[in-house]
Length: 268
Image (cartoon, rainbow, N blue to C red; front, side, top):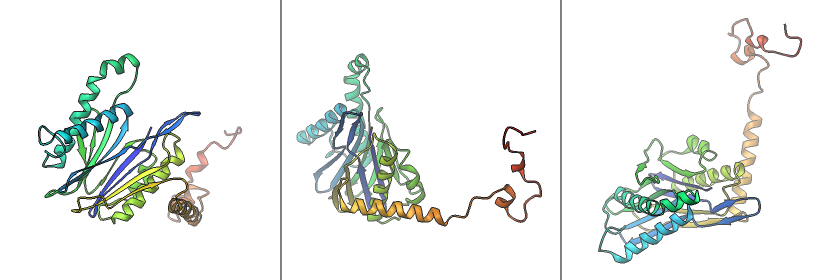
């Protein structure tokens, strides 16, 4: 399994991905799931992939082949809009899956790949798109400025609570790391190291590329501080009420519904 996410904020875009590809008891491997393309000075693209590794590898190779053949044919150099890049990459992905479809069926292998494509083309705003195995895509909004693929459920709650489009780029990267950390705490199929890339609007080059492992000092400090904060905040919460009347306050009805709960074998 895997977990990749991208966050679009006013200052730019953050991309993050784990590197685990197999989580069996005796066999764990790592593979880079973040791929960067800067085919010209007026554009930059970052692609995150979750799914079949062979499909992903063939897709990356075909994107590179088309760039080598430019300006002949469609490529990341020929598109004028980022959504056109999403259409192009989605079409390549679908073609590869259809090409090997019969073999996938015979071998009972899932050949699908789900992608996040983001970046910027000069004259357009930065954006991110989730590309489905079928080749179609969706984008983000200011209300929900992030996309996830892979094992998404564990890292989603913290994003829903804290992410917003006016978040600083550095804070968005920090939030992405917390989301990834929450995921590896609960699911063995997602693992270190993590790959991060940040892109600042209208720069047309990545602001940073960082790989974070278990021994990375910053990650150790963040993880420890985050855990301590949870414990401290939990300790400051009010004590749990002993009855429904306690829970609702002095104005509650005289009858306590909790009196109807079963309390043991002598319940009448």
